[in-house]
Length: 262
Ligand SMILES: C[S@@+](CC[C@H](N)C(=O)[O-])C[C@H]1O[C@@H](n2cnc3c(N)ncnc32)[C@H](O)[C@@H]1O
Image 1 (cartoon, rainbow, N blue to C red):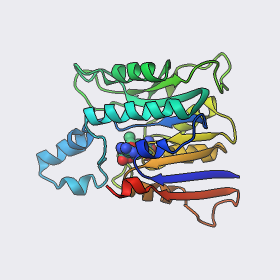
Image 2: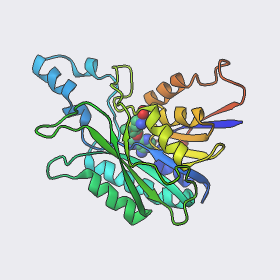
Image 3: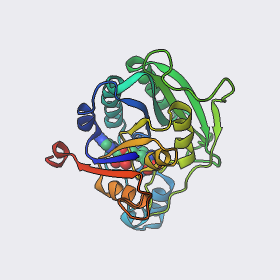
């Protein structure tokens, strides 16, 4: 039996209720805080041509989309992560690559992971194509790995796993999450750093990519998301509670009261 637990709430509050040393792996894609929804190409094109922003981008990230907010969010999340991860377990965090001018976000995040949990490795995710930017255009992101002490809790990669991964990025439609990650990326992390039946947590679940990857690989998953519209997207992608799913999947959904009171 695989249990998928989807929680609508603020991960910082929800994680406080997760027991110490109970999680086998955290895989997450936090908001980068780079105001993508106000400065990306679609938005700029729209400003120039005078279209309506809400029509072009119906699903902007509402929470954590400025740098100070997202840094504090990550910091608070990592403190809880350290407590709830099993000894030697991994917390994997994606982050934008490149420099961003005088603001090397990936370096700041790597140092934060190192301070709170302990840095292990930076994987370069070559996502193909050219992204935003001038002069150097972005074509990779990092997956920053931190490990909660030694020895490794799980490692299924032997001695010949490269830290450069080529996986095509997702170009989201206006019906998708604006920063949806490829399922294959989450699957690679999960298969290397957990075993069947383990518990995976994604505190910034978005549209449920980590949960889909965990299900494909027969892992249990807890996913937390603050924005109700992404909760609904996740349910749709997973055919939540539908009889089309095999009986061995247990779906649990919770609306976290402390968040709902805000
Ligand atoms: C970069 S997106 C994740 C996208 C995801 N990887 C996917 O493939 O759909 C980060 C998500 O974190 C959510 N978020 C921001 N602050 C949060 C918080 N305090 N607790 C839980 N979720 C939060 C945002 O609403 C957003 O959907």
